[in-house]
Length: 80
Image (cartoon, rainbow, N blue to C red; front, side, top):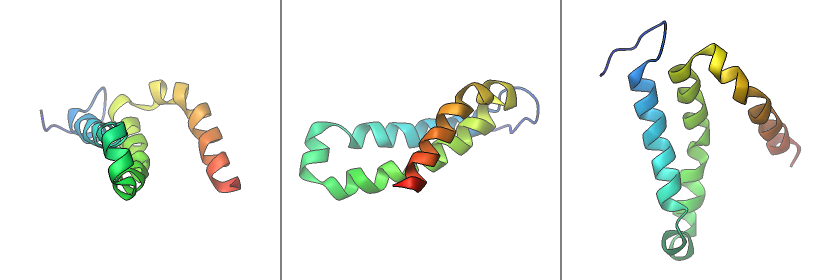
C-alpha cells in the first residue's frame, strides 16, 4: 500500500490526493460552508496538493488528458 512506484500507479500519492479531495468535498457541504466560511476557503487551497499528487498517482499519459483544463484553470487564477 505504501509503495511509491516509478512505473504504473503509485498508491501513496493517490491516498494523499484522495484525502485532500475529501477534505475539500466535506467542507463544501452547505452546513460547513455557511457556518465556517474560512474553513471552506482555506481547505479549498488544497487543490494544489490534490493536482500534484493526482499527477504522481496516475502517471504522465493519463495526466496529460487533464492538463489542458488544469492549464486553463491556472491561467484564470493568475489573470484574476
